[in-house]
Image (cartoon, one colour):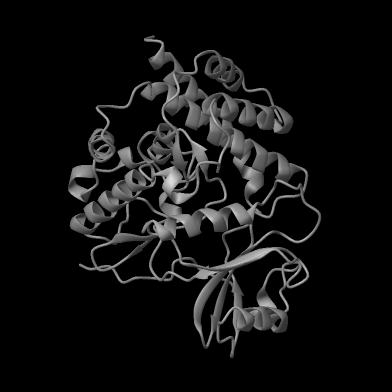
Length: 360
């Protein structure tokens, strides 16, 4: 059976249903689009449910369908919500032939709609929030997973100098900086003591493996950020480049691999090992890694357990931050308050990986 392509992301209604505080003057936007060479007649603006960090909108007009990403309105840290970096990276990758939306225009003038923004092409297709992809055939699942693997390998193989991205991130010490960053966030947002989290933070700091050659990394390479198109699903676009930088490709890969190794019950998407992978046409973790290594010229992944522990810890720290903001009454997600219970199982899973790395 061939899956019918659904909208990439569900969106809210038209202008009157854009979330309170995130409204955009359609006249001002239409005038800007017209100046950018887009026929903005009949402009209809809708807001995506996702993209809460950088609000995201669907534009429909006579000139076609586009997507707008903006900095949130209001006073922000200077380095936060750097949508200029997002626009820079998709512009570079589009020129390199990678599957990203086509960049259309970047506007740093906050007077136009209330904050800086950029416009890119709308890529029709489908996002799989359930990574078991239950409505696909085994052959279609195999195609989707292989395409995701191929796309990540291609991303990590981009020549940074040729793409103009050699200075896109800070040089060196990627893992040390990441462990430090997320440790600080966790300490600033923790709402209870979790001994496993304290142990794993100390271990990660003391056990950083040798650095690998940096590449461009996405930072959140998951199926919810991949748009698939075609009757034989292939990646049509990688979206949400907010965390992109130059860094450790193995950290990027092993974050993506959490679909296979996260502990059960901590994510609504589940974990792939709960399924009969062979019957579903989904590769095993080992086979998926082998395909990535073949595509990137690696013999194997060194220090695999460290990277698994790091990513479980990183996600635990992110979720703790969401939970703390909810308790403070600042989170957009009405269910964020329930997420604190997910932190300890992730920390305990990270500590188990640390012990595997130590041979215990």
